[in-house]
Length: 136
Image 1 (cartoon, rainbow, N blue to C red):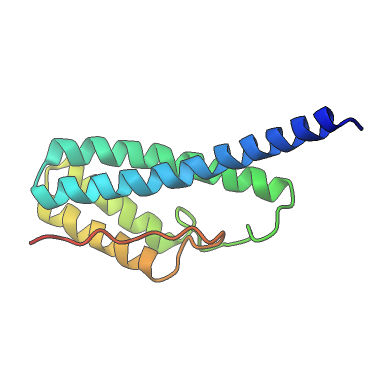
Image 2: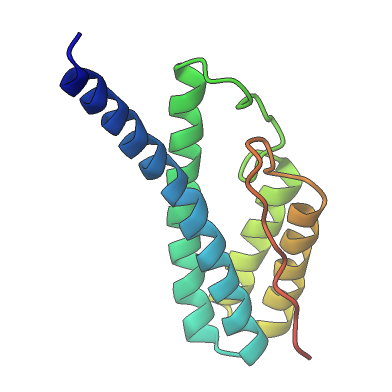
Protein backbone atom coordinates (compact mmCIF):
# COMPACT_ATOMS: atom_id res chain seq x y z
CA UNK A 1 0.00 0.00 0.00
CA UNK A 2 1.44 3.37 -0.93
CA UNK A 3 1.94 6.21 1.53
CA UNK A 4 -0.69 8.23 -0.33
CA UNK A 5 -3.23 5.42 0.14
CA UNK A 6 -2.43 5.22 3.86
CA UNK A 7 -2.69 9.01 4.22
CA UNK A 8 -5.97 8.99 2.31
CA UNK A 9 -7.41 6.29 4.57
CA UNK A 10 -6.19 8.13 7.66
CA UNK A 11 -7.70 11.39 6.45
CA UNK A 12 -11.03 9.69 5.76
CA UNK A 13 -11.06 8.16 9.24
CA UNK A 14 -10.17 11.53 10.78
CA UNK A 15 -12.94 13.26 8.83
CA UNK A 16 -15.43 10.61 9.92
CA UNK A 17 -14.38 11.07 13.56
CA UNK A 18 -14.75 14.84 13.30
CA UNK A 19 -18.17 14.52 11.66
CA UNK A 20 -19.33 12.12 14.37
CA UNK A 21 -18.25 14.41 17.22
CA UNK A 22 -19.92 17.45 15.68
CA UNK A 23 -23.53 16.52 16.61
CA UNK A 24 -22.49 16.09 20.25
CA UNK A 25 -20.81 19.50 20.31
CA UNK A 26 -23.76 21.14 18.54
CA UNK A 27 -26.20 19.53 20.96
CA UNK A 28 -24.33 20.98 23.95
CA UNK A 29 -24.28 24.43 22.37
CA UNK A 30 -27.98 24.34 21.57
CA UNK A 31 -28.81 23.08 25.06
CA UNK A 32 -26.91 26.08 26.46
CA UNK A 33 -28.81 28.41 24.10
CA UNK A 34 -32.09 26.88 25.30
CA UNK A 35 -31.09 27.53 28.91
CA UNK A 36 -30.10 31.11 28.14
CA UNK A 37 -33.42 31.79 26.40
CA UNK A 38 -35.37 30.27 29.29
CA UNK A 39 -33.38 32.24 31.86
CA UNK A 40 -34.16 35.48 30.05
CA UNK A 41 -37.86 34.58 29.65
CA UNK A 42 -37.58 34.54 25.85
CA UNK A 43 -40.30 32.03 24.97
CA UNK A 44 -39.90 32.36 21.19
CA UNK A 45 -36.13 31.96 21.46
CA UNK A 46 -36.56 28.98 23.79
CA UNK A 47 -39.04 27.35 21.40
CA UNK A 48 -36.62 27.79 18.50
CA UNK A 49 -33.67 26.49 20.55
CA UNK A 50 -35.75 23.53 21.74
CA UNK A 51 -36.66 22.57 18.16
CA UNK A 52 -32.99 22.78 17.18
CA UNK A 53 -31.96 20.76 20.25
CA UNK A 54 -34.43 18.00 19.33
CA UNK A 55 -32.91 17.81 15.83
CA UNK A 56 -29.46 17.60 17.42
CA UNK A 57 -30.65 14.82 19.72
CA UNK A 58 -31.95 12.88 16.72
CA UNK A 59 -28.59 13.32 14.96
CA UNK A 60 -26.71 12.12 18.04
CA UNK A 61 -28.95 9.07 18.33
CA UNK A 62 -28.27 8.27 14.67
CA UNK A 63 -24.52 8.53 15.27
CA UNK A 64 -24.80 6.24 18.30
CA UNK A 65 -26.89 3.74 16.36
CA UNK A 66 -24.34 3.74 13.53
CA UNK A 67 -21.50 3.20 15.99
CA UNK A 68 -23.37 0.35 17.66
CA UNK A 69 -24.04 -1.23 14.27
CA UNK A 70 -20.31 -1.05 13.54
CA UNK A 71 -19.55 -2.67 16.88
CA UNK A 72 -17.71 0.34 18.28
CA UNK A 73 -16.70 -0.09 21.90
CA UNK A 74 -18.23 1.98 24.66
CA UNK A 75 -21.51 2.69 22.93
CA UNK A 76 -23.74 0.30 24.85
CA UNK A 77 -24.99 3.02 27.19
CA UNK A 78 -28.67 2.21 27.61
CA UNK A 79 -29.27 5.29 29.78
CA UNK A 80 -27.96 7.75 27.20
CA UNK A 81 -29.71 11.01 26.56
CA UNK A 82 -32.82 10.35 24.63
CA UNK A 83 -32.80 6.76 25.86
CA UNK A 84 -33.93 6.92 29.48
CA UNK A 85 -37.62 7.21 30.23
CA UNK A 86 -37.12 10.01 32.75
CA UNK A 87 -35.09 12.02 30.23
CA UNK A 88 -37.81 11.54 27.62
CA UNK A 89 -40.48 12.56 30.15
CA UNK A 90 -38.60 15.74 31.06
CA UNK A 91 -38.05 16.52 27.37
CA UNK A 92 -41.76 16.04 26.65
CA UNK A 93 -42.71 18.21 29.64
CA UNK A 94 -40.35 20.93 28.42
CA UNK A 95 -41.85 20.84 24.94
CA UNK A 96 -45.40 20.99 26.28
CA UNK A 97 -44.56 23.90 28.58
CA UNK A 98 -42.90 25.82 25.74
CA UNK A 99 -45.84 25.17 23.42
CA UNK A 100 -48.23 26.65 25.97
CA UNK A 101 -45.93 29.56 26.83
CA UNK A 102 -45.43 28.31 30.41
CA UNK A 103 -41.97 29.75 31.13
CA UNK A 104 -41.92 28.60 34.77
CA UNK A 105 -42.88 25.04 33.78
CA UNK A 106 -40.31 25.05 30.99
CA UNK A 107 -37.61 26.26 33.38
CA UNK A 108 -38.49 23.52 35.85
CA UNK A 109 -38.36 20.84 33.13
CA UNK A 110 -35.06 22.28 31.88
CA UNK A 111 -33.61 22.05 35.38
CA UNK A 112 -34.72 18.42 35.54
CA UNK A 113 -32.86 17.74 32.29
CA UNK A 114 -29.76 19.49 33.66
CA UNK A 115 -29.84 17.36 36.79
CA UNK A 116 -30.12 14.17 34.75
CA UNK A 117 -27.18 15.22 32.57
CA UNK A 118 -25.10 16.11 35.62
CA UNK A 119 -26.06 12.77 37.15
CA UNK A 120 -24.19 10.87 34.49
CA UNK A 121 -26.79 10.17 31.80
CA UNK A 122 -25.40 10.36 28.31
CA UNK A 123 -21.74 10.05 29.29
CA UNK A 124 -21.19 6.78 27.45
CA UNK A 125 -18.38 8.13 25.29
CA UNK A 126 -16.79 10.63 27.63
CA UNK A 127 -18.79 13.56 26.27
CA UNK A 128 -19.53 15.79 29.20
CA UNK A 129 -22.52 18.06 29.44
CA UNK A 130 -22.10 21.10 31.58
CA UNK A 131 -25.23 22.38 33.24
CA UNK A 132 -26.26 25.93 32.44
CA UNK A 133 -26.57 27.84 35.67
CA UNK A 134 -29.92 29.54 36.06
CA UNK A 135 -29.49 33.25 36.73
CA UNK A 136 -32.42 34.18 38.88
